[in-house]
Image 1 (cartoon, rainbow, N blue to C red):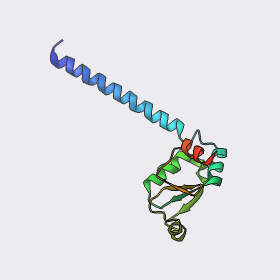
Image 2: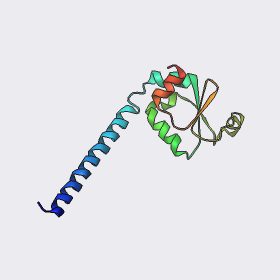
Image 3: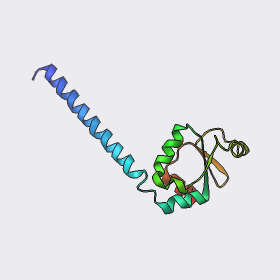
Image 4: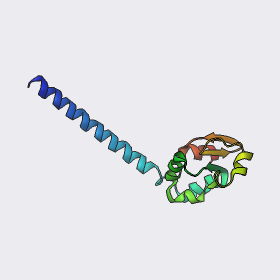
Length: 119
């Protein structure tokens, strides 16, 4: 084989490996998101934590997707609609979770929320 063909073959193999890895990652994320979040877990987290969100917050949307249809069981305060409550708690960034009086800023994995809330 000449150098051009060898180089092209190596590039094709690398591309295929990258595509397979990306598909695997996407499938793992899809399967670990809302399928693992049962209604019982979401209710427990909702009883033991408050989630502060805001209209137009893309990170908040990502957090919502993790819970899927069970998102409705969380205790959610929308800082766009309820600015006073967010000001009282000095919420500067969304999403922010308040668990046991502690602020946790940013999107949190379900497992981490379970650990923090004891659910």
